[in-house]
Image (tube, rainbow, N blue to C red; front, side, top):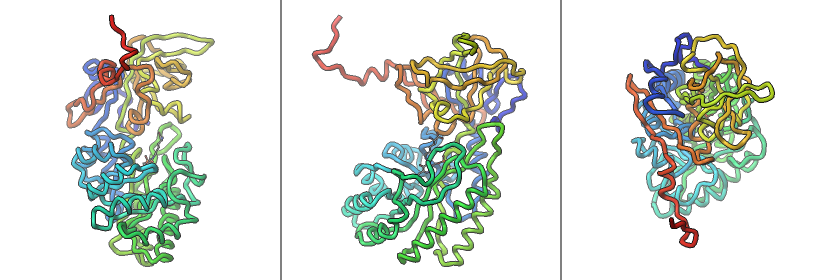
Length: 432
Ligand code: LLP
């Protein structure tokens, strides 16, 4: 909620650079990232967490190579969910021992790549997956470390349903079968069960709710390790740390969360969890959301049955979240930042679907064609969680401002480029 931007200025600045100038240089629509905000968020969390906790950045929240490289340079490990994300992490220089692989439907090729790379661990999502990891690991003559992802019967309340709490799930193994699954894992010769993974909510803003959840996670992991006589080397708590998208929401108090987590950890170490236990935290949104701004230019204005529409050059092919989550994203006019809001607008893009709105009934200063709209808090699940090919537009560019300098970190993909790789069967070819 513009926590990290100065809204009193006449026009938006990303670090010290004018957003309007960046839009002119790189064109619109455009994703802009302020590297110093990624860094502030990372340091806030790092300082708050106990030393036994490792931050494994959830790459899925923003997989741009430059951003993964930035978190690597700050000391983070990564949580990833695909071969593409593994390739990204390795290219960004993340050490294999700082990589954990979590997510349903892992293919044999992905498992093989993770094993041959020698990552820290794979979090297995099913009994079948344990068996597949075991089979693939056979060729490597060394027990491969795995964690078991559990689908538990507790969850903190999410602001808006993201992960889905305690319902039937494609994620993890139901806790009712956990003991059996651990026994199965222990009977397999090529894997070693060393961790428990539980991730049951995203976008949680209350430290107390996260701590209750942590208590339950530790309790579950401890009980299972006792019951099955398993020495755990890590407990992976997933992500879930929220950010305020609206005025009504308050920033998560990571200090309280970190202090509470340290106490829970100390208590369970006294109860008998191994002294060298690592606690993995896999934040995505908390680290990336607030550093990103999506810029889009107003192309047309119209009124329809009492609603004032701003028609812009961007849309949900670049930023899907506003259709999905009712809280939406904060919007400002970048070139009229501190002007009083006097009109109600809805913002639509060029796509042929009623889903294509970036905001509905929001207050802005009077807008004209050519104005530049800034949509905030899009650094997590923005570019990456959208549908770029719908209507064959150019994809947005991504630009990072780092140490006072702007860098094009992902150029636009133009129709010429994605047409180049497509093939028309011989009988359908058009000869002019
Ligand atoms: N670890 C795992 C295994 C995950 O699946 C995720 C996110 C995270 C960590 C990071 O969670 P976070 O810290 O960001 O809460 N569609 C939603 C986001 C889905 C999150 C999926 N998993 C959205 O647009 O808000």
